[in-house]
Every structure is written in structure tokens, then in C-alpha cells.
Length: 184
Image (cartoon, rainbow, N blue to C red; front, side, top):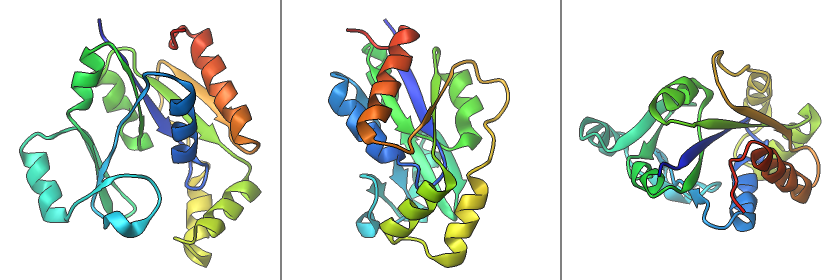
């Protein structure tokens, strides 16, 4: 039996990690994939494994990642251990970059995308509230919020996360149940 990988995408400030955590609490057995990122672990935000650029390069060379990419001046990797989770027939959810969605679809049978959106005013307030970006950086992130998904993706569920978290979680679970991707 093969599991399913769900890649979560959306603009900065849309609440990807918050939604993923809430969905995991409502979806027994869902595995959240912990990313490896070239930034200090005390940088805040999501739970991740922080490494140096040299450590990251060595891990790429060793084949430690199922997927990896560069964005916003950082390197991101998805540990190969996700393959073992999927081989067990489990569903795994991971925060991905739009740039690797096609590769993920080619690599993982049944791959699905959860694309989160939110109103620009909501995104701006959330970015300001988290305190990692200011002024021009927030403006740059908001300008990228309209980036489209790459063409050719087979399974995409788009959900607006402008409102209450509980509404978003209910919409995610309902959408995946409708596609028979969540088992009761």
C-alpha cells in the first residue's frame, strides 16, 4: 500500500504551518514532514532542522533529500525519510515551494497540492505581526503572493484562509474527503 504526499503552498503569511498543525490535530495518523533549512533553529516560525550551507550541500551530495530547492536566500530540503512514511501507506503533508511541485508530482504517485490563499490585507497584517519582515520586505512578499501555480498539476485543492482557522481546517478535511484522500 502506498501513502500520499500533500504539498502545501501559499504566499508568506497565509498561515501554512498553522493550518498544517491544526489539520494534523484533526486528522489522526497524518504525518507532518519537518523540513531542513539553512537558517538558525532559533529564527522562529515553523519547527525545522537548521543547518549551515556547507552541511546542506553535504546532505544534498549524500542523497539525503527527496526534494530540495533554494528560495529567499535559503536552502530547503525534504528528508528522504518521507519515503518510508509513504511506504507504510500513511499520508504526509509538507510545506513546499511552487518551484518543486512538478518534481514532487513526478516523484510521488497520487501527489496532491493544497494551495492556501488569503486576502492581501490579511497577509499584510500577518506578515507584520510575525515580526520577521518589515516595510519593503513585506511589500516584496505581497507582490509574490499572486504567483500562479505551475501548469500540469493533477490534484490541486485551493482554500481561502482569510477567516477562522476552524473553517479552514473543516474545508481542507472536506475537500480531501470528497477526493477520497482522507480515510475515516
